[in-house]
Length: 319
Image (tube, rainbow, N blue to C red):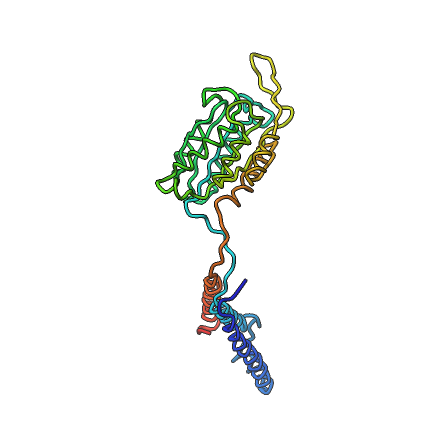
């Protein structure tokens, strides 16, 4: 923490002086009480009260003064704030392999549930869009702040939603980049800060080469956070015949490393939620130094009210 006016902290010496004066005054009052020889009468005119009650209002009052002095010194701290026009594109694999039940209830259903929690956890001012991809990619929801439309789009994430079988990771990246470039009238000349969250369970089988698409993302300064979802033992049932669909995250890892994004592996629904939460703490934010004096002033005012309430409750007077 850094203070913009550190010289004002010298006022804390005044608070310390008040504390010393209070302690000395209490000791002097104790000596006067002992000089009162009729202890039975003293008990009647000054009944004993819990010691902490006598000192609590004064203690709260001095703590309030200390906090107000700290706030007066204008402390600053590093604070994470949402980036202006921050845009997040969520691209979800809807190929047949996502119907594998190695993740309960199946990979695609678990992915939809986690995606819903992820977008709900982002700040309301974030623009969030949704892309579905299999053998091709399509924008289901353009980036925007309408979370209801996004929820409806997530519900439309079904196997075969793009109409073409396969896994087109490169196409998913390029389609997401296109949605970012079409965000608003400024996007062409002043691109918004953006991130792509890409979830898949397999290697690329069709469309544009993922590494080439990753190069496009690098040029656009859009990191791709890739999530490899599933287990090596996954399979889908086709006409009573099990077809092995083991997870393959090599391509996703290469894309994430190329674009400066993060690569994550998840084998359960809980792990996937944890991955999304981890990503959500970093995308679309920047760290700035801000004045945080209000924290200390606000707490000081609460202590002042506590001191006043305690004094009025126990002694029928203000401190």
